[in-house]
Length: 304
Image (cartoon, rainbow, N blue to C red; front, side):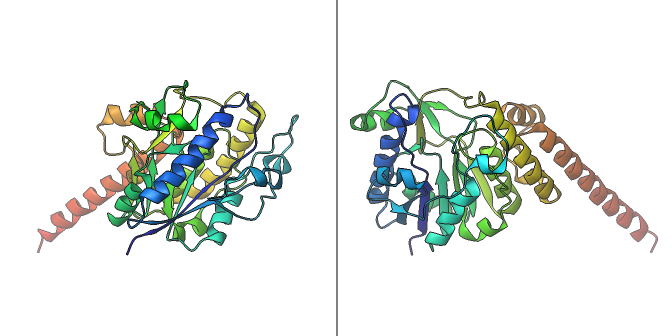
């Protein structure tokens, strides 16, 4: 039986000067095409989580969930107002609206290839209960929906950060997301670390041509220091809750040789060496205790 998949994004009206002005129509069109392509391989439903003022902008082929009611400024003191949604409210809307076995969240500027949902179904059938798909970065010169065939054809460049999250619905009630908002850094690290913590069989698909982003920049959105600081504080709460249960062996790159492993952690914007180091030390001590106990048991067994 084909897996059931529910995918949610957060459409928003923007001015023509915004990158999202050109990116969102491409995202909408590619998601619809991928849904149609996957018929017979997966049952896919597209959802949107939107504020009331953005409802008229959402394409008809998305199922609109109840309008969002919360935003980051309700949970902190800011000198300027940005109505940035909370990821926990977006995912709660998806969880409540759908009975699908697997849920997907992507940023609204992340387009998908025609075989995206078919590939997601394949990895689900391999037994993964959670995975992330890294995007490809293509030229910023693309602007229009009619250019999608050329966008899909462009292999693009890899990107280290995380912006496509697939997970079994049973994991969502376990997530610790606090008041993390989308649109600024720390959304990636917050969602990914929940997957490392709670998924039984997690994988990072870092080199697949399944999603793409118009524009080749790697680091962005750090300029709004107030909202970055807000998310940093919220992630500190998440980290406190998750740290006792995290296992470095579930982290991306954990199986790489020593230097490659640490370089991958250091230069990935969605990883923190301050988390990886203590977890690796914890795993090392656990391994040492196990080996000592094995040696001791074998030693004393020789007395008999």
